[in-house]
Length: 246
Image (cartoon, rainbow, N blue to C red; front, side):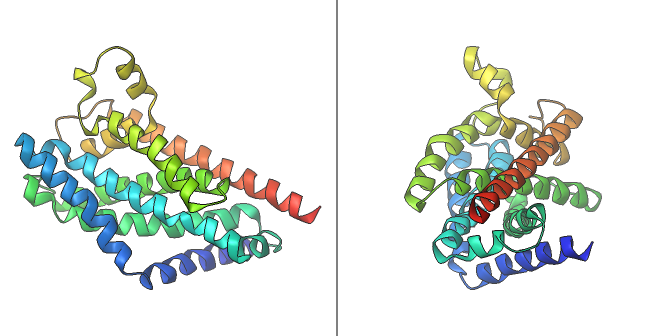
């Protein structure tokens, strides 16, 4: 059992140490969604309407940018040495994902401190489910970032894919407009978009009035999406390790 958890814990710790050595990342990742949220929210006179979307955007930026380290690790040779180690591939993947997800979660909690600005009241009994929901979303988005970064050879390509795929996913997730007001194919895309369920899950735990789909459905879809991504990451790592061994 220690052969599984020790490598995961070591890689998790490595991601945290790397983050604390780059303190400018905290300001950049938290400040950008905060400014965006304030501009859109004050412009529409409804900060609360966009709060969950801005929180998910904060987590998404942190999770995605943290997985850039995969590309850097490949360049430095660390990724190859990690894959040829005797540790289980799933353990190594889990450690990388947990490290980046923890950082995204912490920054999501920092953004949570701005909830009173939007008039969002969070009771003591709500803190645990809200924190758990943010971590689940962080884990899922980190897994998505891992899948994208794994096949990228350059950070420029990674950023291009992020702008092409992830930003539109966020825009049609219920962050900017509710599903109830969407029409035609946009509404169908929203139903198929995993981020829609992340936004809805947050709205449910924050007791916001824009919670569609239902809470249990949102929880199950978000958790299932995260699990599928974890399995996919493990399979990609195993495939890469097999090629390296050959």
